[in-house]
Length: 247
Image (cartoon, rainbow, N blue to C red):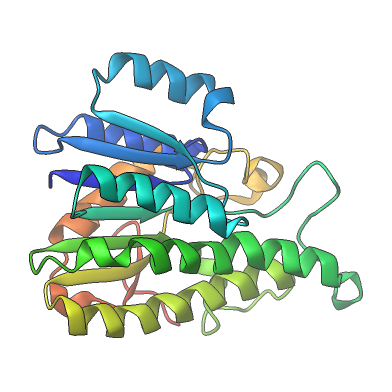
């Protein structure tokens, strides 16, 4: 891998992807996008230490213009990407957004907000960056999903917006994998479940977790899975341990 990209780089898992990729001797440049990269002390600290190997840019997945601007800037620097991590996601926020416990709690505005970040945003990132994966060599497009997005594995109910948005993302991944394969037979486009990871997204729900990973541990496990996948696995849904998850 020479050129890699991380969308959602200021969150816990996104930062871990950036750190992991910068440690690799075969990575020349890491392009990292975040909604407010200048206000992320962690990203700015990594930037100072990266010696020019890290390129930061604003990218708000709910604002397609910002995605297009970022893609234009990346294309000025390279005509290919070897790896893309689509990471950003939302489950709750300071404005009262949170997972619904009952169907009576379903709210159109909150559904739109969650889908915009968890499903539509990653698809728009793919829309603007997929041409850089058409170079014919191995190219990995990893999308951060969640086990709760599995329809076949849903036995607890609740969490309507989050579950459905991740299920929508999974369908987007499956669909774009078919198209990418036509353009690059060596492309691998998959959805990943990172496990329960110690981030701001999971903090209110960590007490029920059987295993809680650090972001670095989760990313190391996912990268191991991605390294071992072949093009035959494209369009799949995998957990951090390499096991296949039901759609």
